[in-house]
Image (cartoon, rainbow, N blue to C red; front, side, top):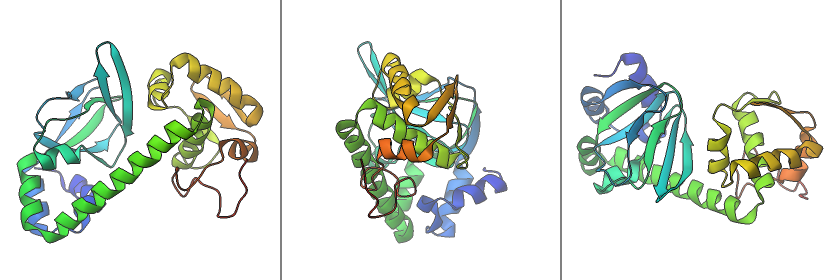
Amino acid sequence: MIRPENAAEVRQLELFATGSETTFLSFTETGFVQRFPRGMVLFRENEPADFLHVVLGGTVELFAGSDKRETTLDIVRPVGVFILAAVLNDEVYLQSARTLEPSDILMIPAEKVRAAMDTDPGFARAIVMELARSYRRTIKDLKGMKLRTGAERLANWLLRADKEQGGTGEIDIRIEKRTLASRLGMTPENLSRAFSTLRPHGIEIDGSRVEIVRPDALIAFAAPDPLVDDPEVSPPAGRPGR
């Protein structure tokens, strides 16, 4: 069973908001919340998708590896859902997941999710919309990787992180820098060089703390674009780029 306060939080997610009460009750009655320590691998790629996971607290890294190489594919924070496609298709995970800090994870049996998709039109529509959003995020991420330099990707990440942390201009990098580098498609050495590149464009860095001292300069360098970035991070329509 899921505690009422957690259930209310999950119910607000777009994936669960439009489903029937019967559907949501089946999730809360069979799902459970478990607290995992930092560094715990929740599942590995090529394992069967037994549960749909929802991050209620903490941070989860989605990653993949090949031979001796490993890369970070996404960072999931509350309240976030992963990995829906594998659950719906009843196939193996294409990614692995591990906690980056102590995390509370809601786990809903995969068969309950698939059954609800077949019987609840409201939930089925929500699934389609969630997959569509996920697809668009993936395309934006791919465009950012292919069309921007490492320093430009870092600049846009800082603008987004600032927005997520309250827009004060003071950013706390809450993940290890090697993980951030991997997420941005860089080596740790390239990330360090990217920070150095951004210093003349309005930032100051002290360890894991970054201060945006000249926002206009950083925005001018980053040139955020609504076709690549979140709309709330991008400049108003018609604002000139670089």
